[in-house]
Image (cartoon, rainbow, N blue to C red; front, side, top):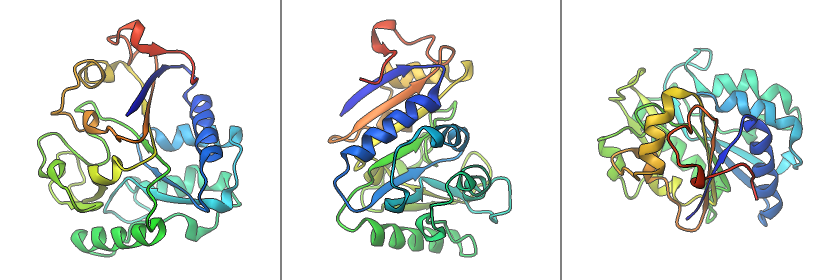
Length: 240
């Protein structure tokens, strides 16, 4: 795994640079990207005008989704539909795979894995955009949860999320760690301690610390507040 911790107060600009690089290096017909909720949609929206890409090649997946109706503020796809997709008129509706919230959670996870596998085929995701909670969770993979031990499923159901709503669909570590590139977006003083535990202590009890694609790159985009407990020598102010 190639890891870089980039301290920046302009995460959208750096994110655009990373996406541009990943797209330029992709040799496949499709560019497959997984996205998350939290602050990710807003940062991506600011990055879009700075991106140089061919939207027709893009296929978007959800790294996790809350099983609530699309018009519910907790629905991640609904946030992207409001915040990001209006900025990309070139992106057709079928290029973004949404979770079918009308299904029971186990069925929704199976259905979503089937559709993700159909798009990826033998390939792996080109890029995942992730966040991290103050408890160290990422996607809907939480500390001490049985899903951290999943070895086979790419997408799994969770019915006991410690953070509401309880029913969710999430990527698992086998798919996350098969990705070519992962970008974490972290900001704010509330993330400082958990960021130290992940990046300095490599605390494997925290799901975010288990994101380590052996053949991929991991970028942590952090601001000054979240990075205050990270040694300066571990940080970079540049992408290259």
